Length: 480
Image (cartoon, rainbow, N blue to C red; front, top):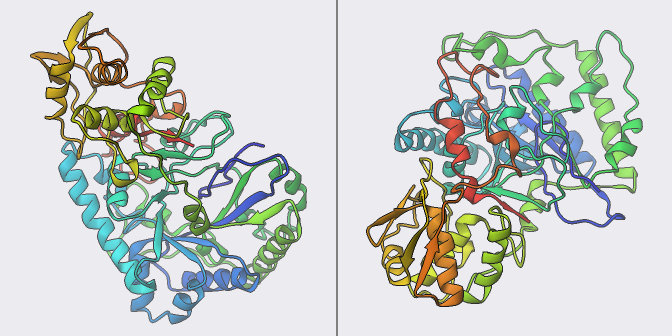
């Protein structure tokens, strides 16, 4: 079976048999803080799902949480109590958006700005809905950001819903170029920079049920055979679109802050009769999915609970790790799931005399600048490698080159030399020119992505640093 994500949302991919049910998740980009009427749709859709015994995944703009409290919408808070919640950044499309903040030439400044905004947004959501309720992040549009991933992992949020992969073809365009898209490989899950990135596929949304000029409901059952071919299917919509004819942020924040704060431009309401018909269709769809034995409805909380324990690395695993990396300098899948950064951490720690490396207790990092390797064959001693290992700071981004006995070698050079010393006990090993960062074959769109001049980003946003920082975290890629 294949793995697919329909529209902008998130779900877990796990190994499955040909007879396993397709897991289906419902996701809702919950973001319109400009109009209180949109809150009615949040309440109504949440209650429809609850009435059918289904948990939805509502990723909510932080400021909307504050607005719901400000407006006294206890009905919305109560309706969402049944569901799984995530953040969709503090202000969603307001500028600077999360991608624009992450494009600062100073990583430290980009991190501080992003952390300041996102900690505030998560705080607003927890104040509205309860502490510990925010378990995933879904940055809006194509706003993929390594800085944001760093921030969310530090905030204890393990899932990033907007940068997933799919079993389908890698896409181009303003959305596809910004995603961790993979072509057709079967995997159980993809981790990148300490966050789980579930499948993402933009082709079908629950908004397609919306009556338009008296249109009949599409025959959604005809989609079921196609859906059942996959392991996982995500179904998605914006709640405000049940009541509005256009997106709120298009008129207020497209390419700039086009309104005075809290004096937002309003978009046209739908005919209430059309909204009522839409709700009937949505409920009928949910019932049809529930009634079809080929499908099993799931949610992000279930996904997180199914994460596998991480396997520790001792010297006994080094031969297998070294063999895997010599065959393919990329994510390691056997005898366990480890990223290249895990292998580097293990090698450094074992050279220091530590007995094991426990990946469940640390963050892993890639680089902030392109790593630089040796230009010609050279030799390094085990003693010099051990001395260099003692000076490497594993709590932050890895150095682009490493001083080993007075010679500057690349981090990949160091890794392969260290693995050889640990496995063979050699007192001296040869270092040869090699690729330092690795191959993007598992995540092909990252290699050349640039998300400037797309979505609602300002014209001033040039993506000078954002995408490159994501590429430089390739060593953190892990698949299981």
